[in-house]
Length: 166
Image 1 (cartoon, rainbow, N blue to C red):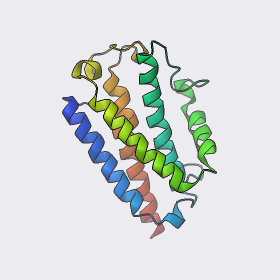
Image 2: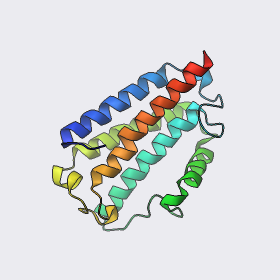
Image 3: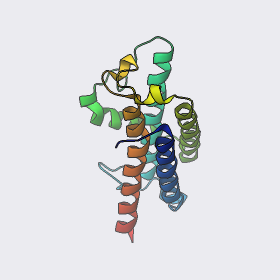
Image 4: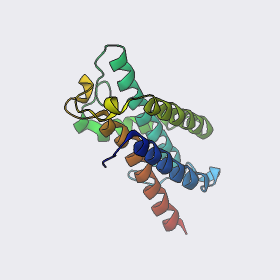
């Protein structure tokens, strides 16, 4: 997705996040560990943990750059071609964690991501190759993928699952 400005990006992040959270809050807490939401037995809890983990990876990439380090993308020990395995590892890592703890971390992570994006300049967001770790891409590509696109996909997953349960 293309964004014309930082303002538009922030608006899309906020809107897609709000849509996802509204859907999430419509799911009774007792159903957050019900399998079958998506893929190989994913639960609502797994979906929230997935979003949390990818937001945190985005933040870690940017922190590493600011510290003069080169982040391992997408995560240490994984290549972009291995994202399905990374996603399974994220699911396994959070599987036994308390639903309310993961949700609180997701809420806090969103606040941190939004503050980080708001703190960036248009140049930092939109200049291709501005950061070494983004290669020839602009940072906005990574921000949009790990927020707007992720929230939108998660909302579609929750809607589909909710309809199928009725």
